[in-house]
Length: 344
Image (cartoon, rainbow, N blue to C red; front, side, top):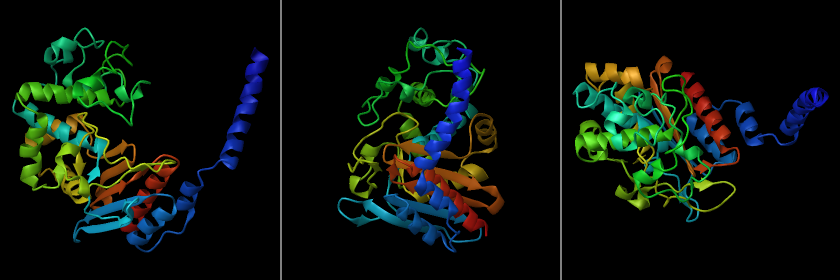
């Protein structure tokens, strides 16, 4: 047995090197190695040559007018060019809005960061391990240990549940990933639970609260909490390689992954979140203690990045309507190169 293990230790690195050489992610490598272009539009155009179907970039840099860039297709089947003002499924970027709503309600004493899951959802106390120890703070921070429903083998990305409660079924009656607050592991289930808690505390949908208390004050009229609220003609088509199916109609209603918005609307929200204009002093302190100020999103056919870069005082939003193959690597390389161009 020891001899076999020693042999494997010798062979496996060799196999890994061979796989890298024989099956490398060439699109990502070429995107990284190419000389940096002079303009963001050139970089965006190059992204299409690297296998992406469509890309939208929004840049809000201090002292300059907001800039929009797009390349590829909004709708590949009908040959509709990419539109920088089109709507996009922002997936987990939605969590920033839910965390903001939670911070506002904690500030008003409608919620407590230290109350437990069992306090807020007693009907689930016997179905989620450690429910009497998991606090709202831990759920917001992904430190609850509650299993991630998207990791369940039975979860179907291309045929998701149509009700919030159905997403929870993939995480109930399962062992915890770790003891509460003992570690960190990103779990979409946390935000489904938080969405449910917000609904119960408010007495109405947390999505209505987000509309009224977060979107309206910022004038974000091109942000929707659900795909069903948006005009489908304005939504970008998404594709998951190596398939050609348009995934636009697949509706993800789970809190923390359901929102649709333009790149500019996301950029305005992110700027406000980072400069404090969307929260008062107390709300900002609460938010800072529980969640981050940037996010990435992923759904089949849709990947997004929303970040504020303090060193160049710029918000950069990137939407890519392609997933699968090496598209995630290419998208990340393209984003980093755009930021590098901005930094001069």
